Image (cartoon, rainbow, N blue to C red):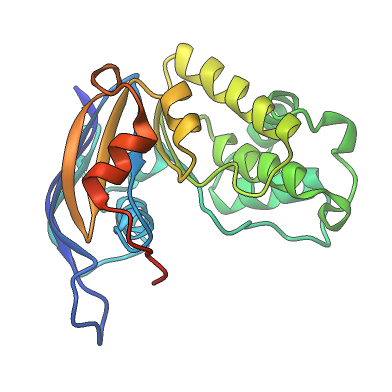
Length: 239
């Protein structure tokens, strides 16, 4: 069974003349780490917001482990780390995890036990009781990931998880994702860092202007950045 099947998704934001997504189809095999690449405006973040149920009013179908979204059981199998840091900076790392765990409806015992696990995984155990406002950018990114992992998701969606972080934090995130994937977690990774995608992912979907323009094995591609520019062009995408 595929972890994710997206069929012919079409979506437009109110007041926009250009579709954010148009007849967009994508499948992610269970247990795979797959890259979702594209220039600015390709529709990657919009797609992730649709998968996680934040956006409605689209045409097409989203299946998560066979459950048609919005399906609560399927939704609970998803972990999502968005590009914007989604943390309360006046709270500590542990308090953030307790808050988001309660929002997800996790039992107190599970929140306590899983908080220890994800803080260890993301290298933040020593800073568990420190306020997030004192964290570096890399530490906040790692905590953002910890929140997404708290409920032990089967499918992890990552939108630019290493943007603006230091090399040590980036390497730690890479190692964490590799370990999670090796343990069976399915990961869909959206990134602008070509080396990151080629290092971590076994397959790739390339999107542009709301549509899929390539989907295949990463082994088919020798130089991902060159391939990306050949497919999407060298013109600036400032929108």
